[in-house]
Image (cartoon, rainbow, N blue to C red; front, side, top):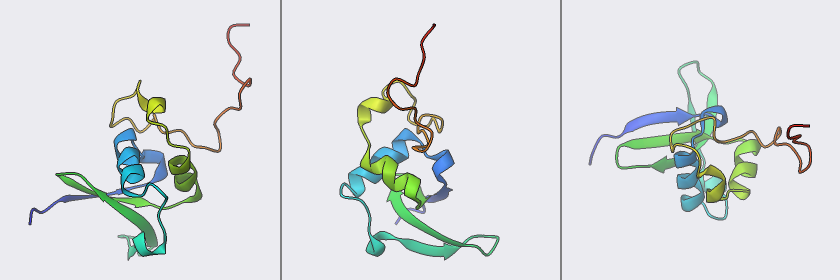
Length: 105
């Protein structure tokens, strides 16, 4: 078995590639059986879900923001972004409502 690089990913660093992997692996969302708990280097308890690529095992920290973003996932939203762009995945708490974005007035 190949030794995979392990990466812990917080919502702020979530990329379109990792989000897509999460939605593909957990199309109906994740549940308690999918959650991995561990302590980080600072001794803090972390809960995460796991997705892997050929080279990397991602442990994505779970949060309400992650659940909302997965539930609202649409691949079209990320077409204009690179797969590894962490700025592409927007915090669902700050997404403007329709009509709130003013174009050149």
